[in-house]
Structure formats: C-alpha cells, structure tokens
Image (cartoon, rainbow over all chains, first blue to last red; front, side, top):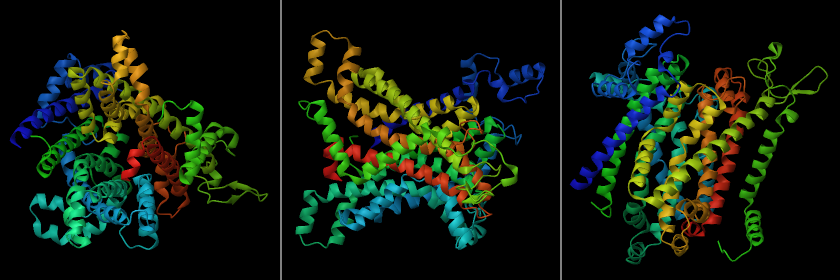
Amino acid sequence: MFFYILRRIPQTVLVIFGVTLVTFIALQIGGDPTYLFVSERASPEEIEETRKMLGFDKPLHIQYLIYLSNLVQLDFGDSLYYRQPALTVILETLPATIELTIFSMLIAIFGSIPFGILAAIYRGKWIDGSLMAIAMLGQSIPSFWLGIMCILYISLNVSWLPISGHVPFLMLIFQGEFIQAFKNLPTTITYLILPSFAVAFYSVSRNARLIRSSMLEVLSQDYVRTARSKGLSEYIVIMKHAMRNAWLPVVTIIGLEFGFVISGVVVVEVIFAWPGLGRTVFDAISNRDIPLVQAAVVVISLFVIVINLITDLVYAKLDPRIKL
Amino acid sequence: MNSKKTNNQNIKDFLFALIKNKWALTSIIWLFIIIAIAIFASQLAPFDPNKNNIMERVAPPLTLDKQGNMKYLIGSDALGRDSFSRLIFGAQVSLIVGFSAVLVGGILGTALGVYAGYYGKWIDDIIMRLADIQLAFPFILLAILFLVVLGEGLINLIIVLGIGQWVTYARIARAQTISQKEKEYVEAAKALGVNNFSIMFGSILPNIFAPLIVIASFNVASVILAEAALSFLGLGVPPQIPTWGAMLAESRDHIFAKRWWMPLFPGMAILLTVLAFNIVGDWLRDYLDPRLKEVE
C-alpha cells in the first residue's frame, strides 16, 4: 500500500501541473489576453497599462511561473465583476455546490444498487426489461431539461417540493453555527431533492447497468454456486457474497463520477437558482468575467484530482488484486 | 468477424441482424429521418426561423391563423418566431456538431492511441499522461473556459467538443494496438520492410476499427448532450442560429407561466435523438462483439 501511494503521488502532482498549464494556455489561445481584461472602449494607453499590470508583456514561460507561484500562494486572480479575489467569490458559493454534489453522488451510488441487483436477479424478465429501458432513457435525458420538467410538473402543478432556491447547511457548519444548521437540515433536503435528482438520473442509469452486468458476471462464478449449494439463503448469497465483488467496478468510477456529477451540477444550478459555483460561472460567462471562470475551473479540477486519488487508494485497499 | 466471408455476405448479415432487433431498427430509421430533416430544413420549415412577429409572441401550440389554417404547430417563442421551424433548423446544429466533433476527437484520439500503443515507451507515457490530465477536468467546465475565451462559433464549438473526446478513443486504440502488434501479420509486414506508418494505419487500424465505431456511436450521443448544455448556458453558436439547447434556455423564462410546450418539444427532440444514438451504439456493440452479449 505504501509503495502504491508513493507511486501515485508523483502522478497526481504531474496532473496538477498539467491542469494549471492547460488553464494558463486557455487564456492565451484567443490572442493577446489583455483584451479579455479591458472594456471595449479602452484607450491604447489603458490597454498598455493593463498589460503591464497583469504581466502579459512578459515572456510566456515567465508568465506561467508567475501564475503558478500565485496559485501556490492561493492567489487565483481577481474577479473582474466582483472586484475581489476570485477565490473569495468561489469559497462563498462552494458550500452550496458541495451540498448538491454530495447529495447527487449519494443518489447516484446508492440509488443504482437496488435497481442493478433487481435487474440482474430477474434477468430477462419484465422487471429487468423495464428497468433497463428506463436506464437507457436516463442516459439520454439532458439533466437541465429534466430539471425544467420537474419544476413544471412536480413543483408548479402539484407543489410537492419547493420550486427553486436553497437553504444553507454546510455554510453554517463552516461558520460554526451547528444548531441552526441542523434546524435547517430537513428544509435543506427538501430543496436538494429535485436538483440532485435531475443531476443524478444519468449516473443512476449508468451505474444500474454497470452493477447489473457485473452482478451477472459474479453470479455465474463458482464461489457463488458453492454458497448456494451450502444452502445459504438467496438474500445472503446476493448481499454478502456476490455484492462484494459486484461493487468493484462502481468504486472505480466514483472518482470519474465526481467530475461528471460536478459538470451536471454546474448546469442544473442555473435552473434551480442554486447559489453555487455553477450559477457563479454562468453569471461570469455573461459578464465575461474570465479570471473567475479560470479560477473556478482550477479549483474544481483540483477537487476532482484529490477525489480521484482518494478513490484509487480506496480501490487498492478493497481489491487486493491490485499489485502494490 | 469472419474474414473469409465476402463483403456482400457481411452486409447481408448486418442488415439481417438489424431487422431482427426492432429497437435498433426504429432508432436507425429515426436517425435517418432526423438527418433528412436537417438537410431539407429550409424546404420543410413553414417559416423563416428568425422572422420575428411581435404581435404573436408566445402563441400556444396548434395556433391557427385567421383563415383557420395551422400557423404555429408547437407555438411561437418570446419574439414571435415559429418554434416548429426553429426545432427543424435546430437539428442541423446538433447533428453537424455531433458528427464533426466525434470525427475530430475520433481521428485525433485514434491516431494518438495507435502511436502510443505501437511505439510504447516514452511516447506512450506522454500521451497517456496527457489523457490523465484531460480526465482530471470536469469536461463542461473546461469547454466553458475555452469557449469564453475563443468566443462563439460553430468551428470553435466543434474543436472544443472534439478535443474533449479524444481520450476515450486513444485508450481503446492503444489497448487494441498493443494486443495486435505482436500478431503474425504485423511481424510479416515488418519483415517485408513496410514502414511503420503503413503498418499502423494500413494494417493495424482496420483490425481495431470495430470497437472504435461502437464508441463513436455513443459519443455522438454525449456530444449532442454537451452541445445542448453549452447552448443552454449561452455558449456555442451565435444566438441567431436556432439550437435545441438555446430553445430550452429561452424556455426557462416561461416556466412560471406554465408554458409547458416551450421546454417540452426541444427537450423531446434532444432526448429522442440521443436515445437513438445510444440504442444503436448498444446494438452495434452486441453485434460486433458477441462476447459482451454473454455477460449482459
């Protein structure tokens, strides 16, 4: 395990470098990046001044090193619109996004297990057929459209759940107001249900299919037959013996899933007026607040990298077959 | 597939398998219809998709004109433009972006993957580390960053979405190339003095094509979804070009007025098209690789 971690860390560092390099290059590909930072009516003197101030007059490799050293000091640039450090803006909106992401991940992982198992047990029967048809549909529905339709039919027509908005929980936890946070929790969850359903439907569908096929593979193996012939109940066989191995492919994709769910969250937040990072990025697009978009991409990507590292380590722990 | 069979026999088998699977057949037919709609959009659309009509804004579906003829089949939008015509033209962007981005990503990814698998060593290392880096980004966010800087435009959209897809192809092509390069026909080609480029793309590539085609089919589906998401966020093609994603974005302002038809139709268009590509991809995978079917 130790050597695996030792090998995995430099890889992660390399990827982090790559991510910073790509986000750095992103600003350069449209030509002189100075023009992204000045208004259209800026005079040549102003443009020159901004160029000097932001260091765009320096050679590219120097610019990258400056960018990198700023990042290390947690300086992600300044938002043009809010006129404050981009990181401050992001940290304010991040808790809401994390809430939605975690809730969606939970649905994506635990929601798919019963469906996957059911489909595998009733392989070829109508339950299997209809579950897999729904899963196929789920992989083809745009999450933001699902969100809109949920608002239309569930919130507006039958008003079971709130239409949109957000009640803070994590933000309060971070601020140390635990009592208020837990008082909020039930309402927080009612607001979370629709958006996270819209985000997670795709992942639930994909994972259910994955669990089904990996379950089928496991169920055909000798040790499962042994367990059955020992006279163990079908429940024990499935949940204790088969599930343990059927799980593995799902664990591997949790890391990737996280990046995927985040992408969905960014878009779905816009529909549900969720005061998170996605909403902020959406506003930043219309304000052409490029440093903020850049900072958001870096922060989220670093997040994804760390989560990926953790899932890989967990996977190595779960599956001893991974060579150390 | 059996190489002794003639090409004709292969095509016959393929069509026969297709007809036997009613879902795949329906999907293929649906895709041909959508492609035809996109090609003949200007003949099929009852109105100019960009013609405003301030007097007839947000008309509900099945709105008739004064003579009692059908005017707005699925309503009109906030500027009084005919939604049905916009829906028809929207197929163009989805399909052009879907196919071109997959072509860009597929060619790039396959080329890099074959190189990585064939040469191995440091070339392989570099290409695969690049893939790792790309996978670390939540793709939509990276696309947003590049599109905000590059500005809107069909070509930019295709390039960004295309480059976003290369990793999948590269990984598959690499793995397949590694397993192929030890085979006799490659050895034989090497012994004959065929150059590496011809071996890679003349001999190996045709043998690893099947899984790549399957990936491509699923990929068109996910690119269409990504394009819709980006259009929804206001990135992508200029606003005067109708897209399904942009129609959904516009419908957002009408949710509270319960104008259900505004999001319904463009959403259904995306859903049905993406679904068709996914079903075809599923079927192609089963057809081209029967081993997978045993597991499923």
